[in-house]
View 1: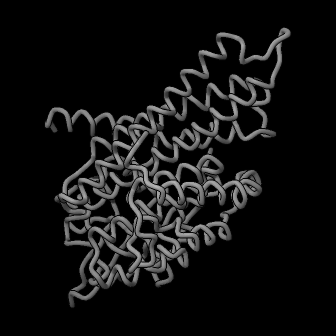
View 2: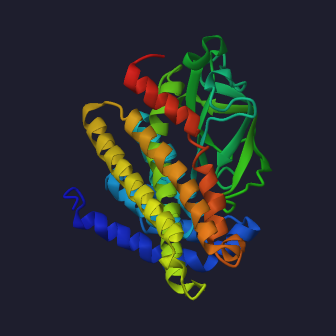
Length: 387
């Protein structure tokens, strides 16, 4: 049906499906309940190439394209979105940014060990009082008199994988008077003096993907660890988020697919009033609408993947396509998982089944890497050219 899907795409999709079912499924519930970071299976994902799917082989990755990444990530998230979150951050927010904006030395030092799964990467933009409006961030990076180091101070929040990250792509102010144009990006080594981790967030969903604050207290970052030029941080952050939004859309698709598949099985097995509940028109209507939303999400994600491929070849952008995929897939995942719980009734509300976990995990896809409101703004601005 889709001639752009190759046998190689199908192979990595099947590999991800097998790994998720055999390695992740048995431990997903435990890690959700305890909030423990699944470091062993994350390392295994790296060994199998899932942590750097789009990274060229010379930098330790699998050397595949965005579609392969999306298809593999969807399969991981069908079983556990927490593992998928770690995989998404590594691929989209960390490696993609360094590959596009980093120097050769930065790629060799900070991409190779991340793509291979030896180490873990993270991305830090948000602050306690600065979310969607990045121009108001309070953290600061000041170049020392010798011009050799930036001294960084401040607190960042909601940093996925931060409790275990070895390297973090940080966005902070170097010229606060310029607001968005004063943001600069840096590569942070978390084992250096002046860096510490704050509280771990007690989240509603994706509980096994560790999320915490990070704190900088006169942290000295070498000039050679600046990513791009001074003042280019906001452009880098937004470019990277385009890629990240395809990852979150794929995560949402995985959750919606899992909820739909479970609902189909339940509708064919559960009986009420002398017949299978799947024979009732109201259940049939739910299943039909769920299927339409799942497949429409997939098509928008494929469109975004192809748009990104073209943009990489022409040095263009694919912001609208990525935002469309993320917006529709995330809202569809929330709707589909809600309907799945309704179809399952009391069992859907029980922790004995994974439906309530899909529901909790789906909510974050409408929030992180740009809320649904931000996605609508990006799409509208792309259509009108107005700011």
